[in-house]
Length: 236
Length: 304
Image 1 (tube, each protein chain N blue to C red):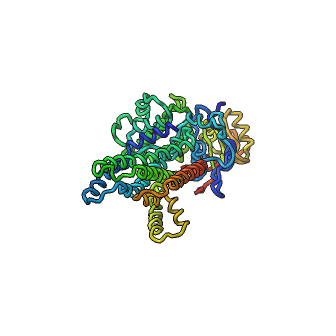
Image 2: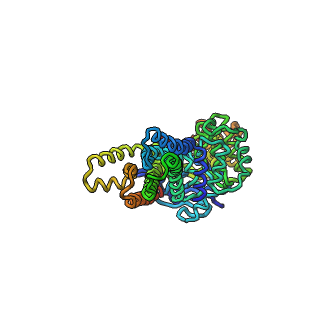
Image 3: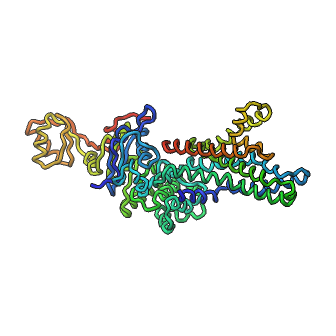
């Protein structure tokens, strides 16, 4: 599997969209605090506002990275020379986690540096902030698992953008729940959906452990499900 | 005889449709095995199954004596390379980078043979040109170069000359012959262009409706397809006796028809037959091409 991960990392270096995501992490990490400072309205937790936008873009980039393996038929090169299907799936999953998390980590580091420069640590609750960052990263990992699942099972370019399309109804659901949701099951669904988890991170997260648990659960379920489907899939 | 690939009653079903129906074939080591069949006959399905892209519904196959159900099949697959329909290449990379990536996929640390591979397929001078800007023939050759990474001794080519211009077809043909003769690579090649196939294949497998209709060597096929004079006479028994006395090779088709595989002295033959009271109705040149042989095996029409 390590060979396949190395190959994917090599390919990432040649992909313009992935490079753009890395640059976007830095640019957003600088622009957002600067704008907040200019408007005299900057708080430490504001940086999590970018989460939803970034995750949507990253799911498209991550999905397309994998689905290109199908559209270029290069997945055949891996299977024909004897790589196991589980290894191919897991290598793609790890690569997708990197595609999701590297720009986010770059964004967080840049934002933290800017926030330290602009507002210092006086208003910072380090414990709450660390919990939010952890929830933020796990929500991205869970979304990467969904993206990999969709891309590896749809097996075409459509798989690359399907996750992005699915995010719109999820986002609408999340907004509607916040507006009208009083029922317990709506709250639970909202806690499960990674996008909804990100929506509440502009404040210190009240249930970080629950959110992380659901993200880990989603990650495991989608990886195992995806591997089971991919193992039996007929490829062209 | 050593076989690189042996399939044993392999079946592949898509819902109710049987793409492969108990297909049994044997690819001898060192051969160029021409896999012939109409569209939808099951050629590509078999190739995909052998390459591990699809799993058989029933039956088994052996690659270098290792069964597909054996865990060692993964390692055995490292001995083969394949181009299935379209070449599997990264369009945004150069030819060299494509080969480097394939070396990494295979875990081959040395990149020393890349230059030799590019030279072998005639892509040494492509420089920084990306694969997406290559012509169809160049992409096909790059696909073969990718399949040749790791020095495989079994190469599977599915319709490698589809869409190529005459020059491209000649280049691919020469490359296949070179690989087989100089590197002793066994090649399984499927093609619709039977005339081209007949120029390189040493063995043939004819497939129809997911079943292997006939498997034969090029010599056997040549014997079946060779030029002859078809004679219609009143009694083929007399004709046979006469031809035997003239030491001429022939084949009796029915009571009135026979194929004569030489150019006998027609006047002498006619005179001898006349003496035996055997009348000649007609004499015509008969030449069965690979196409007509194939049609006679599988019948007309289409599987699509």
